[in-house]
Length: 340
Ligand code: NAD
Ligand code: TYD
Image (cartoon, rainbow, N blue to C red):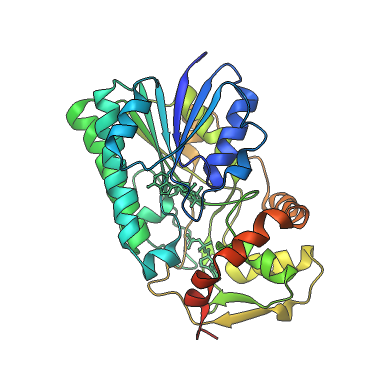
């Protein structure tokens, strides 16, 4: 796969920027065009180390802009589609942008991909499309799990997955989809549980845990996610889906927060329980044996190691996340006010 031009959408966000840094480091022969609308979640600072390279181009723009997307795709071989509204709590407060970006935006990209003969369209999706597993059970999500999205976020992502598959079946688009679990690591916006907890602890504020905090997520270190996408781009089978997960086994949210408190040497009473999220999915767990047996990928970073690295990064990079907390004060107020 030498000398390809890759259109990355949403490459200034958390996973997209980790992916671009990873890809440019490991595939310097390729060219990356990063199309990102720079919403509250997009940050060009993440890409400062590559921004002057001749094989990196940043374009500020919206994936719903067909003319712009057509112009960019005309010179591309591959599309890796990360751009999305990605936070469940924001989807509960304001679903509109989730419909626009996640559904309409994906549709625009698919139309343009067909029109421009894109060789490979890779769609990044989430395990949240499968709904909620029973707490305490040992069932897991796999490529065969029926869709059952329960939040405006997961419903919009499910819609986008269906559109991608429909473009494969109907028009022969060469696509792949990955449905991955909760990512954590460097450059994650401090509204998601792990960076929110770290930033609260550093500000000496209690860490809000929704409801009883017994909900379970499957945690995937973002670098492991990047290697999974690399495998799928290199040897994934056309029109296949791969679920991607981490090396965690049913860690309840309270244990995630307690791990962070232990690493940061802070007392457990900094954890406080607050009013639960509406429609809160109680358990996600991912069986990633298909991508392991078909493509030889598996996660390599344990939860302890990933958390140590993540905490260290946030400690060393206050200048990155502190301004984001202040700039988004209105959101934090709206989401957390009156919950305690
Ligand atoms: P993020 O919110 O950190 O970043 C999203 C990026 O997309 C931002 O840079 C934003 O500016 C850009 N964007 C948003 N709307 C856009 C639009 N209309 N046009 C162009 N750019 C736009 O998200 P993330 O956590 O990096 O997630 C990336 C992808 O991975 C998403 O598709 C998400 O659904 C999926 N995913 C994320 C997780 C996770 O734990 N973060 C887990 C599973 C799947
Ligand atoms: P989040 O990081 O928002 O990811 P998602 O909802 O997409 O899984 O939340 C992870 C888990 O942490 C989820 O069960 C909700 C919970 N949570 C809290 O308990 N408190 C918080 O302040 C946040 C943001 C999340």
